[in-house]
Image 1: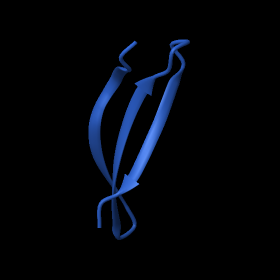
Image 2: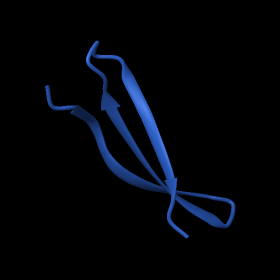
Image 3: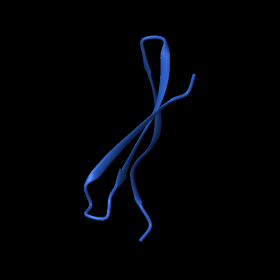
Image 4: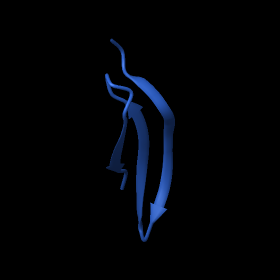
Length: 39
């Protein structure tokens, strides 16, 4: 089954790095948070 996006990707600046954060629900409906560094 397709993953359900709970929160569209948002950019957050922490210190001097910019992070992209997205919340996706797993198959049990539990929220998973994924973070990646953009710069």
